Length: 347
Ligand code: NAI
Image (cartoon, rainbow, N blue to C red; front, top):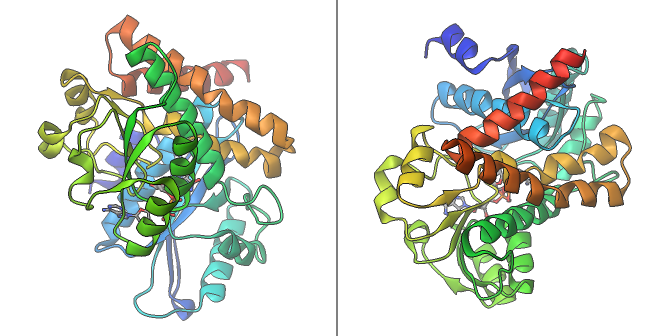
């Protein structure tokens, strides 16, 4: 990777590597932008085959956080922390305390919360050594149900565009990933009258969601290619690649997973195939919006109102894409950057 070229191309302000060998702590904290406010973004913990993969994840995810917060109208910038999971067993408390110490050195330029592999309990451990944490069990708590609510609103906006009605009753939704967001989204979709097809690599989670929502089950290999109205990627990123687009059999892609497109070019390829892609950072802003309870003192009602506003934002994105003849991803990015630029001009 040509490091500084990558940073310049993506527009990052600061990327820091942290290491505390005594507790196996290795982390990348990427601060993409602090123009609208502190760089807010979750902490992800997972094994990475190569250090470069962790860095690439932190760079892509932190930039998406800038766009996500700007598009959601929040006074936050974008950041992300990626922790390389130590091999074998490790002392979780020591790891997350080390993480807190690292975050504290950034003096509030980065504020973190949950992401894949990190629980509210882990954030409580992080809070022991830094002030800059949101989404604690004692505050707004687990962001996943908020994220799921926002994804549902995004799906309804897409349904309105494609089928002329936001009603999801009778729609067939293929859901990849029955984790924190996926399980909550499945419940909401079932309540809205949708028929679900679900998949997860974790058999227990899969069975729990399938039983609770009377869903059909597909294998992890099949789920992206089942015939459906809406495909909802709610596992990891990079699932939509040019290679497998030919096998997609959905009209809409709308899910929670961050960075769903393996490359930016996939957005145009989806549009050419007549698939409406709701940009992930527009659909999945509910979690970061819920952080406004801890960071800005918002009431639960204010949070709900802002999350429900994701529907209108997605509507604007889809309209702009149609009007300008650009992809939905470009339209969402343009709207988000307009908001960053407008705030810059005001200051
Ligand atoms: P999670 O870790 O609770 O759930 C992910 C699920 O996907 C797990 O059950 C896992 O077993 C499953 N999975 C992994 N690989 C799979 C595969 N190949 N096929 C099928 N299932 C697979 O994570 P969470 O919190 O539900 O997040 C899901 C996605 O949404 C992630 O990409 C995350 O970055 C994104 N996101 C989550 C937010 C939140 O509030 N938790 C906010 C915004 C985005």
